[in-house]
Length: 79
Image (cartoon, rainbow, N blue to C red; front, side, top):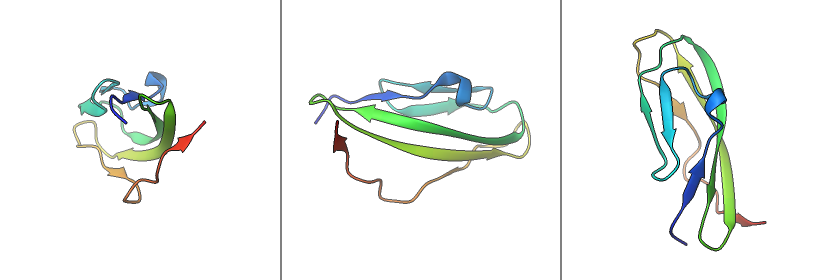
């Protein structure tokens, strides 16, 4: 149930990427090659929550991130 609030611990994102908790948009240009994993949490107006772990591999400092996750995302759970 909207509105939704998203969260990601910023220290887990690849350097150069930022996450907007209001929109759920991940943006920027990664600056350090490596493998990164982070969980994105979402909370709706009725306090239902869900989270999913994402993996990003940055092969070069100028590459575009690739996010891999099963689709569709699971239903939210209360609690």
